[in-house]
Image (tube, rainbow, N blue to C red; front, side, top):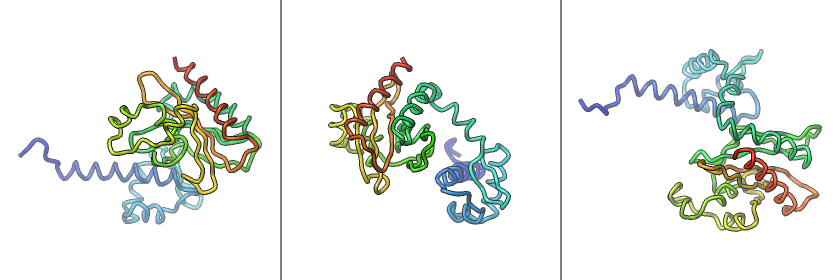
Length: 239
């Protein structure tokens, strides 16, 4: 038998792990806690399988259940997240806090996981309830949204074609490279605008600092210049 042959046990274990990760992704994207039946339906499995997966995730505090039995993401995820790009998060948090409160917008850091643009850390403004929420772990394709354009603009077209074969280099990324920031409107969420500036990190893939909003008295150019200053400050902290 070939050494590369996958045993039935290995396949089963891999499938269980995949389902557990998928369950965490579903809960992270959910607007409210889910019942086990709702989660099972989204996973495409029987309730008994979903229940076993949840019991394991509960053992590690990755999910919790409320008094009605509905499930949501647990505090254990925060402990795991602290180790992801720890230096970038530490350098960015003061700038995100300043941006959020100065602009009255949700500010966040987006990174590239080689498939999508993913929100790493986010800060909402103090004393403001009309902002657009942006949860850590939110992801969208590079074909939409200012953060993806900003990240792409920090790479040459040659580097991009090597890193992401088959994914086009957007015309907007060429413009963003010149002006230092990217803009988008109606690309990810209808009626929502986003502005982002690239963060260039030596020896690593670039990231982006961004804001999302519905309306603002400031012009996109003004907001873009402000974000570019924050990106430069974060870069300085990472040197």
